[in-house]
Image 1 (spheres, rainbow, N blue to C red):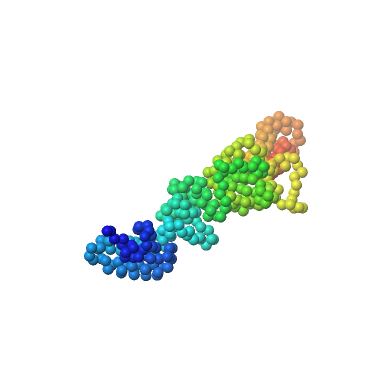
Image 2: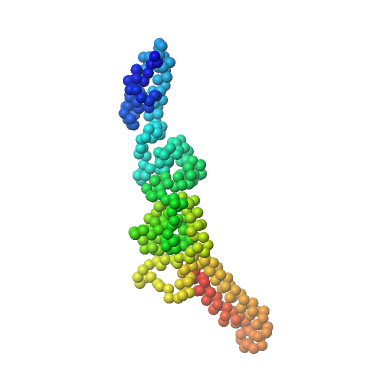
Amino acid sequence: MAIDVYKDWLGIPDGPRPPDHYQLLRLVQFEDGLDKIRKNYKKLNGHVRKYATGQYSNQSQTLLNELAKAMLCLTDEELKQEYDRSLGRVVDDRDESGRRPMTSYLQDEGAITADQARDVKTHADRTGLTVRDAIVQLKMVDHETAARTFASELGRSYVDLADLVPQNDAMDMVPKNVVRRHNCLPLFIDDNAVVVACTDEPESELEDEIRLRFGKPIRPVIASAKSIDRAIATHYAPGMRKEAPEPKKGTGSTSKKSNSPQKAAVEALSEGDKAQRKQFGMIFMCWSIALPGLLDNFVLWDNVYRYYFPKFLMNFPYILTVTAGIPLAIMFYFTHVKSSK
């Protein structure tokens, strides 16, 4: 009859064989006291050595090796953490801010191992990537899984944009250049906030932008950058929606209202359109001076000024430039250049 060394020598009741490290060392499950772990190991090691000679020498040596491996695992912080997690323990590995890193959530799910989590951290530090981007780049998880566990790290809600249709009322209020710049997507207007899908915690600039446009604070939810890019391409396709006007900053007497239809039209332009309008204005200003100057020198001087104008004007032949070119340049400055800032 085969001997059960776990039961006969260590007093471990019938059950899974081999027993887990805690049962093997006769410890309560998830014991953290290093002194207790080492003390039990030393006691059991001495007991098993009594069987090192004779007919059970092979079994004794095998059991001694198992005891040593169990002790070494439970006295190594990282190995113990990984082992405890494999037994179902919820490991408290929060950082100073009280958050658990996304790699811990992935380990809980069995998506990555402790060794892979260390590899991700090393790769992120070496390349300057975030842990979220590093883990995707290493192809350990997909974009959506990375975004979901990153949301858990931040304590935010996660949204899969493939399952959600954003409200047009919300998107109409935020122009394409804003969602592109912040890589976000307004989803819907709630009673107390505007729900916006973001790849990370929103910057203060985006928070201010949303508050100015909606009169409500932002409530960010996390989505993957890939899904946000795809949603922007879909919902902000060319000609799909009108560009929302820039919000008016400031209220009361300090807020200047636009009385000019032309000024109101300029304010409604996107940043890209404003930049283009400014460029055209500068070109018009240059030609406003250059074209009259050319006419003065090469056409009007020989055919008009020298025959019909008083002699005292002969020393200054740029009459058209002064009377028409400069006023035109000033006009283009105020209507196209300055108004586009």
